[in-house]
Image (cartoon, rainbow, N blue to C red):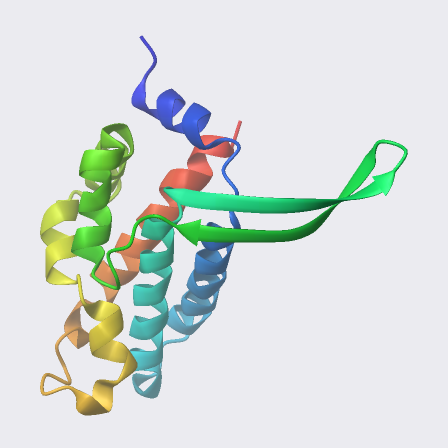
Amino acid sequence: MENLNDIIKNRYAFLDSSILTHGQSYFITASKIYENLEPENLYPLLTLLGFSAELFLKAFHIDLNEEYVDLGNGVSSLASKTVKTLNKNGHKLKELLHHYQEKDKELFDYLITQYKTKTDRDLETDILKYSKIFEDSRYIFESTENSKYINEIDIIFNLVKTFYDSISNLYQD
């Protein structure tokens, strides 16, 4: 029987990674801020981490539409491409994660297991706690709870890092 890593690797080996690539770009930027963390950068960091996690969770259930133009002689060229997520659960990380509990149980189990293994924490508990991080941090000046996530930046950073490490590790030989 295939192990969970192999199942996920085989299922997503040919995934169009446009959404994941954008999320990874936000995470790389967040990582640079995190390495040199200054108090004035806390909310931009949280916003980047929240959006990165959101894109990661939206990247695995997509609709890909490619249109080609015929160049003649049996040759065609990509004219346009659109990638849309089918995980339509807004910005709430909890709902985005639980989408896979129904749509792709193996991916859900893989993410839960990887998070537990890498952090010794429970993903569902943490994702519930930080489910609205993007919404809460992007307009922090509107928030009544300005310091809600400040003392937990390390946990939040490692949550998002675990998402990307879990997928990246599948493709390393």
